[in-house]
Image 1 (tube, rainbow, N blue to C red):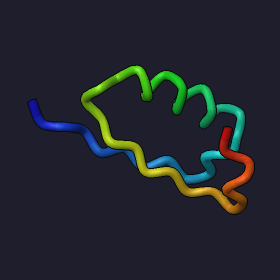
Image 2: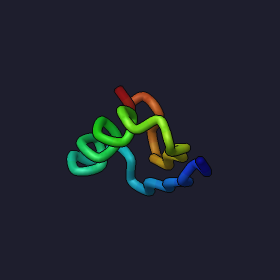
Image 3: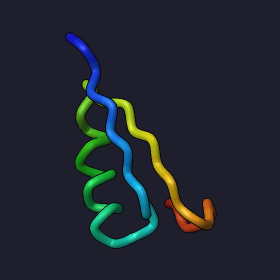
Image 4: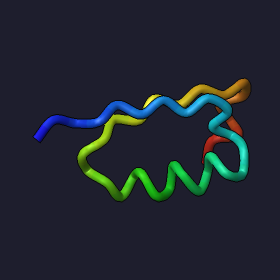
Length: 42
């Protein structure tokens, strides 16, 4: 099965954090995250 590529801009936001948490349980996707301050990513 082909992996889906997902780009999240503003990955430090509240909604983005929920989406990232949901998508990390999906093994068929590759996440690319962009945010201003990498220390915000938890």
